[in-house]
Image (spheres, rainbow, N blue to C red):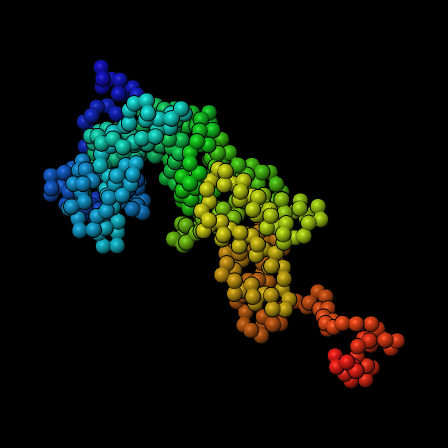
Length: 455
């Protein structure tokens, strides 16, 4: 009876016994696992503990994707893991983990966990407050989010252990929650975002039962701490599939909980074109293995709201630069209510925005000073995106492209003439009355010093 109940509550979980796939039934090989992860699992197994590479790394290897990192799960407690390695550190308060350093690589080792129980385990919305319970390997698999993330690979035998039907879902490229979707989303609303992000990244479909409750439960995102939302947004934007993921977030009604300004941006003329150009540019950089900055991405996502507020302020007669600075502060403050953008990124975002008006100054020494600014390159890339979206003159972006690559003489020739002659500063002095011939009263017409010695 208990097994039937578990099978009904946790689809894919047929029993506490796993289905074990030997090396001939899957494509993963030990040589694909990092040396550090193999070292950690081997050492734990030599001491009589279970140890597996687990989670996203196994999923990616089965899909032919190179994992970014490797995590290990074991039945050893943190205090049993730490003495086995020369450089191992216990971290975490909510749930203790061990970071094992092997060469330059860090392997995160976690002890098998069980689902928390009791009235104090969740808040009034059903969100998990405590998840610090050790358990068996089967319980550890059942408490994970998606079936494709609940696979265990043993590098020593090259076996894949599957408690929840994850292998079949990997083969079908299907994202499926473990357990009742409504309950699992209430436990951790971020799972809704992860379902969308991973589906876009892996080219998977979202299982119907997994997708169905998302729109109804989207407001639960507001209960997630702002700092954690930023971390999830950062993963989303730098996944290499940000464009598809944001489109899917909108389709599932999740964008209001992440970036409340997205609807406003897309409704403005040129806004959607600008955002799409920025996301396509970032996705291309990530897929090519080049760096991409979260600060730059947030600057693009929020720019059109800054632009709208700035334009409105200038229309009211406010001075341009103070109006821009005020608009920047207002937009970032509004966004901070949903996503806590770290201050180190906030400063970069502001610099990218505040440099945009300076690109229009192409006379005198100003272009040379702008070239020397630490954020010139990021601001220039931002300008080229604006030009691509039709928001800034393409000729302006082309001028700066040529100017930064030109030699000294060519740069001098490219400078625009001053728009107006500089006003001469009048010399300071007292009693500056005009004489009949137009010269200042304290200076004789012949230029000689005045009788009182002043010039």
